[in-house]
Length: 239
Image 1: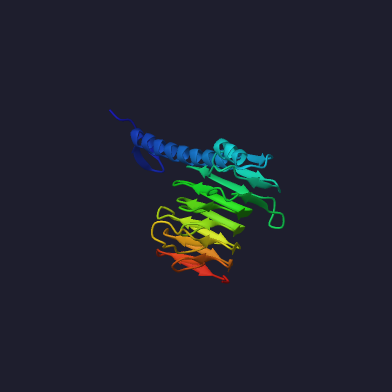
Image 2 (image 1 turned 60 degrees about the horizontal axis):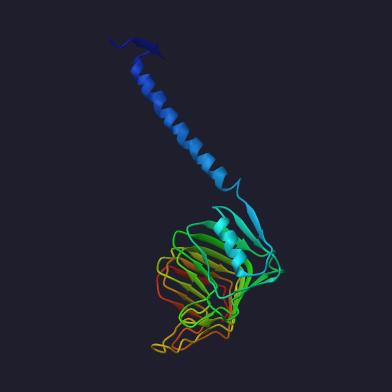
């Protein structure tokens, strides 16, 4: 037989009270785990400083990093040896020291510079991309989500979107306060067809804010930009 107790003048079975307390406990545990997850990805995030001046060293810290970490670059030029840096399945920041003291990532006209893969969120700041070159590819390949701020892209040669190419998988991207100089979609290979000398986007939710474009070319159309999908927002730019 279930015992009865009086709570505020209402008779309630003790089993009902236990059920209510159990639900409160579950809610408390959900809140607690959420708070612990937040602290594990933000409070305990690590800043890594890359001292050697080549892309392989940057890649080693990318591989070492976890969600919320920052990879801090110095003021030297980081040179490519022909390998492409890649970020896969992480949420990290890669940045130079400041907008007035940027770092240079030099592709040395050997190959593309960086790939941001699916399920990846990356913030890139205070960096100059130069000399990214691959006749069939692009200096910066993006399938994930990115924020690119206070950047410049110059002297990149390749296929459509020679400096930056957003694939269909890219669902969120912001390019803000960036400059694009002398980038050329100049692939004269299979069909002599290229568009977007600086940027080509097939993704959605791309925002281009306060950017400057000069002397970017493509073989077919869109010397600066080629936008192939909906959800594109552009403001305060100069061509």
